[in-house]
Image 1: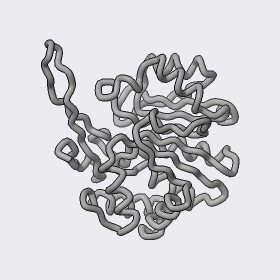
Image 2: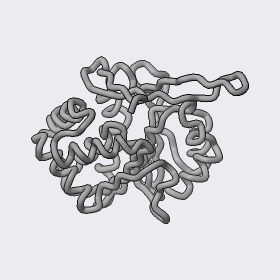
Image 3: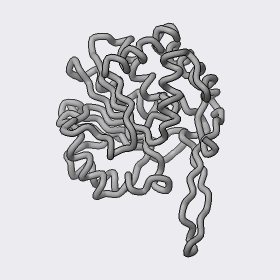
Image 4: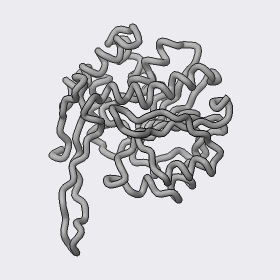
Length: 250
C-alpha cells in the first residue's frame, strides 16, 4: 500500500495519488512516477462535471435498465454517484460494472459498504457518502445501504483489471472511461485498442465520457459512429470527451 496516498483537493473532496515505477529513458533504468486520480481543483467537482452529466443524459433518454461501465473504482465516486442518481430517479435501474486493478481499493470499498468503516480511507468514504447523499437529497446510511444491496444482488459488479475481466458478450449504454493517463496505462489509450475494444462493448445506444481528449480516442469513436458533443475540459483544460451514439445522439 506504499504507493497509494490520500490528498485533499481544492473543493474539499478526497482523492488518491498512485506511484508506479516506469522504465526510464536510459537502458535498464527506472524512475518513479506519481499520478493523481483526480484534478487538484476538485475530485468531486470533476466527477460531477465529466461523469454525472453523462449519466443524467442517459437517464433522461434511457430504457428502464442501463448498463454502466466504470473504469476504474478508485475511491468509488462514480459508483456511489450512479447509485445516488438511481435512488433519486427510481424509474430507471442501473447495473454497474466497475473495474479496478488494485485489490486493496476493492477490499476497502466493500468493507465500508458492509461495516461503515475500513482499514484504510474511512475518512474519505465518509466524506464521499455524506456529500453525495446530500447531492441527491438522501441520507448517507440510505445511500450506503443501497450500494451494498446492489452489490449483494449482483447489480454492482466489482471486477478486476480492464479489459481482462470484461464479461463476455456484454455491452454498455454508458461508459465512464476514467482510466489512468497515457503515461500510466498507455495500452488503454492506443487507437487499435480503443477501436477494437469499444466496437465490442459499446451498445448501439451509447454515451462515452472521459476527462481525456486524444486524437486516438477521437478517431476511434468517429469510426464507430459516435458524434462528439463539444464541451471544454474541467478547471480550465482545453477539452474533454463526450460522445454519443444512437438514441442518445437525438
